Image (cartoon, rainbow, N blue to C red; front, side, top):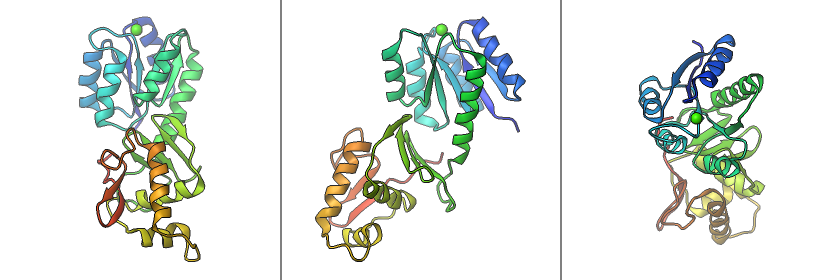
Length: 236
Ligand code: CA
């Protein structure tokens, strides 16, 4: 089945050009001309990728983006105006995977769509063991490239922080005490103590969490008196 793409753009000539170019590449394309319809269609059709204009009637692109991100981890590409530098940042912060500046070349748009779909297909549903990427909400842990991205933005982690995150995420939902994590992530011969784990968890949270305090962390959670665990994933 060809990937399904929802294009949300109120300027019909642009929407039609995008549709034409994507269909020519074999994609199945639906158009929405305002934010309200976009949400309705996204919920009904579960598109594999969404191309989303910022300036839209009814709901704007940011409102649509925020709503979509509650239910899908699929790629969302924003269309932004050339002068809209702050729009790009805002879109990425709200969970867009990429943005394309108007005016754009259809060829570039198609190339970006393909790249994002390729990457998205690597993402796996929970429970699978042979994984190359883990997706949780806006956080992507790329086990092949050793990269972590949040809302499309790369996050710089140390190797140890990455290994700790990877270990917890691969075993999501399971609580590990600090001794276990020291052994598994740092190795048998490491002469640290439990505080090493606590400090690394804190640094990791400061980098990946919206609110890094132990009570408000969303990804790496504390089980008081026991240890740490990665949040159970919503089904992607
Ligand atoms: Ca528009």
